Image (cartoon, rainbow, N blue to C red):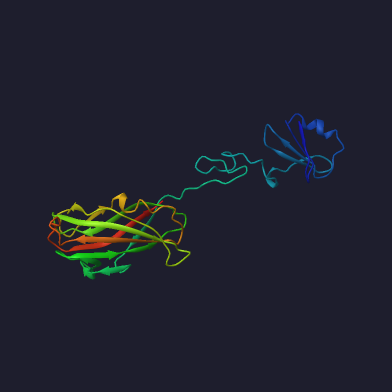
Length: 237
């Protein structure tokens, strides 16, 4: 049996040991916790009264208080809670155009990067709270050809707390991407990691700008049709 000092004088022991406490000079509101049944008693001045319903039971992780991803919430310190990846779409109309144009296509607003032209779109997104890096970027477009798109991707990051302060940039190289060939269906290009690998230590409210270049005037671009971009999907971690 154990005596615990506190606002209420409290004993912890077995149900059989409660008789030993009863012989002491008890005060009203003295507490006895039965360790073998988790029943809590309060001394009324005459007898022990079951006080379990009014008493906060001893918290036991995974028993009467939940864990978080298998980690106990009891004790000191912080628990790191991962919220999963965060996805943000850069839609047409968001960012800047150079040669490319915003047009309607199949009842959707799209960015048109014209055939046989060297054109650019610069979509911009803001880093969400909790994100520190880019997990992936995908360009989603409406397919019109089985030919190759000859494209380059280049990203910049800007400090969100100091407007106009560029943090870093990184680029991949011009690469041929095969068209899907199923007319008017959505297809996607997974942008190479090299196009954003230098963008580290990102924080909430930082700005990321992606330069999308279609070198449609190059011989390696055999798509032979306009490229209609629906969105750019940024996944942050």
